[in-house]
Amino acid sequence: MNISIIGAGNMGGALALGLSQGSIVAPEDITISNPSTPKLEAIKASAPAIRTTTDNRQCIAHADVVILAVKPWKLAEVADELRTALADHQAICSMVGGVGLDRLGELFPGRPLYYLIPNTAIATHQSMTFMASRGTKPEMDQAMLLIFRELGDAMLVEERLMNAGMVLASCGIAYALRYVRAATEGGVQLGFRAAEAQHIVAQTLRGAASLLDAGGHAEAEIDKVTTPGGLTIRGLNAMEQAGFTNAVISGLLANKL
Image (cartoon, rainbow, N blue to C red; front, side, top):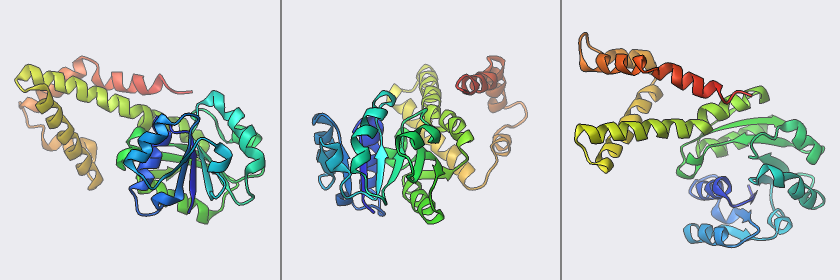
């Protein structure tokens, strides 16, 4: 499958590098365009086989899937540029946040459409990507899921759930890292150097995630380390007194559209 990416910013560049490191799409079958060259040069330095260009129409010439990774205010301009250059078989995938399938259908009428929301961990093959589609075939949906599951995990959902997915997984990267920052600062106060504390917290989060991946339930795993009168319950109660759970839920709901 040939994939073209329009836009080499944080998400477009991360996607290109992530795809190039996988086994489904060959690096030489990836083309990425950007109006200026420094970002393209940085991508080339990391993955020399990826094709780069400053010409969007040239970028999509051999694509099966065209992925749009531009700013929302650039989307209409890019669509106008690409519309007459698109071949009949080419599917449009948009990673433009807040632009749903109705608007994509106006910009690219009659085409198979995907609305994608990954997160920045796509570059390290640990993204959680949400996908809504319109006018696509089941086999194409499965092919797209395979591609993005190799970059972490992916879910095909109803479009009404896309914003919720963005809050939990895309914004959620920042929320998780804010916890890492806070725990790291606590680790420094407990006596570790900052780099050591961050490493400990990161490994602890990997361990917690592995327990969930193995089928564990969050509350059951908490109970396993929460002994009567022990340190863990003291810490959990202190966090709750400071509003930990309510703060997390309030932060999530603050992004609800």
